[in-house]
Image (cartoon, rainbow, N blue to C red; front, side):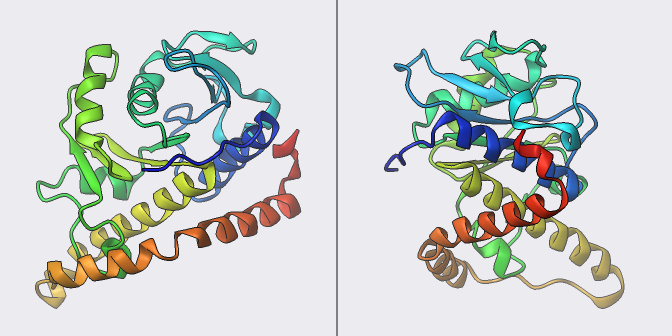
Length: 250
C-alpha cells in the first residue's frame, strides 16, 4: 500500500486523544486495558517512536498532553507515566510490519470478542460486513500478549489487511491516519454487533442469509472508492467532541 504523509505531533496527539474519548463514548473501553497507538513522524526504520495512552487513565480521561512516547521495545522515552507491556506487544508487531499503519486501534468489545470466539469469524450478513470482505485476517489465541515472539505470527495473520480478528481476544484495525483506523474499527465493530443481533434473532425468525461472495467483492470495491469520506466523518466527530468535552485537546 502507498504510504500517507504523517501529521505533525500536535495533530497526532489531538486525534489520538479524540479517539480515546470517542471510544469511551461508544462503549469500547475496558477500564484501563486495550490501547490505541500512533506512529510519530521521523525516525529511521527500527527507531520510530509512538504515542500511547499512559497506564492508569480511563479512556474518558485521556488528553493530548497525557499521551506518552514509547519506542519499538515499549520503553517509555517521554512522559512521566508507565505503560502496559502486554498492550504494546501487538501494536509494535503491526507498526513494524506495515509502513502504512501509522495508527493501530485494538478493542475488547462484547460484539468483537463474541465474533472472535466464532469458528467462522465475521460473516457476510449485511452491507457493512461486505466492506471487510477478504480484508480481515485471523490470529489464533496464544494467551496474554507478553511473548515478543508472537509478533511475527501477528504480522503474518494481518498481512496487508485493514483489520485483524484476534481469536478469543478482540479486534484490531490499522490505517494511515487516526481517522482511517478509527472509522475502520467503528464499522467493523458495528458489523459484529449486527452479526450478534442476527444470531439472536435466528432462534425465532429462522436461519440468516449471507451475501454471495461475488456480490461482497463488488460492494468491497465500491467502499474502496469512498474511503476518503472517513475524513469527513472524523471531522464531524471532532466537532461533537469540541462541543461536549473540549478538554481532550489540552
